[in-house]
Length: 472
Image 1: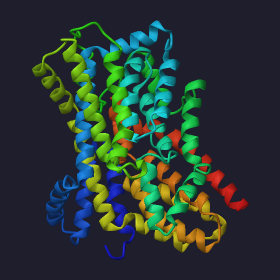
Image 2: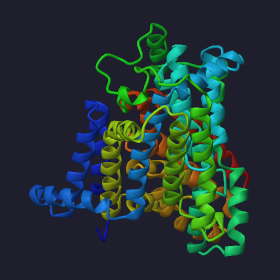
Image 3: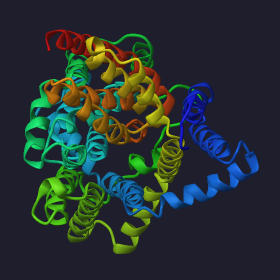
């Protein structure tokens, strides 16, 4: 749309509202997508339906989108392979022998630590932390909603604080395109880290929840249910097929922690290698989507080689296990496909541009900094993409800070932090969806239990930006 209006808000709001009200994530995303294309086709529902199908197919025409979906399927294959090998059981047993994890709090702390340590890519973070921690959460009767919250709170909030990963590279490019001299962009980004209040609040609040058992609202009820031995609420639909987890079959070899640890180490280590190769020797210029796909394939290949050397499975058996695992994640791949398509139609409608434009019209220098945070949050919540929010907001805050003759770093931080906060709250965010999958919990239950904590972190960040705005 050439001149976006409030109508551009309707598709994402419909998708979000339907998802919360009906718990039918697929139909909710499809409904928002259909409404968006109907609007773009003069409110013609027939033409909107045809364009909905065409636009969804076009999502796969983008190499980056296709790689993300392939990565999801490969991770399903890896999770199933590691589970069938007894690697997860061996890892849990090794932790218990060394008394590193002896109860529910230790399992939660492990999930938090893994999330903080694996800062290369957000989806990689949640999948690794979820795969490692989920058996411990089930064993010690912690809720899977708590696991989803912990890994979601230590994925994007950590990744955005690191310059040498795909997140940093993307924002450095956006800064350069917005007019920041290439030699100054890294310095601005590094200074902005100190002002990224929501990311720090999310990570530290998650740690406090673990250490001091700060369970309230829907999360408290989920923890009480898990303590009774009920893994999920009645009628809940986990984002991952339980059969993929590999807990029902006796492994053909003695459980070994190495069968899980080695493939995951290779998976994590290959991410910077991929960034270095695809960036021609420059980590910040590498392709995140390509690198994460390479990393997942390397992890799967490592698991296969180890199991073949142990004579645990034949190639035919490994193939069937991998296909079963990939099939178990097809629902997630479908949701990602629809979410990416919905993001495309919101860009066509100019949803983010409209929200940012409304904010500019009521802009006052006295409230500029907290307003940037709030507007970025609204955009990210509406479009379900922190990266899309960065692309909208950075070209706005760079000239605005220059016009006010103020340091760009805190304004950049407010835009980035708001993007993370809105993405953290949004049911249509890919990171939120993948966190539900990695924890094998119901997606709407994850959103409901996480939202109170995210709102607390958002309120803290808003106050901090208001205080900094007064001091500038």
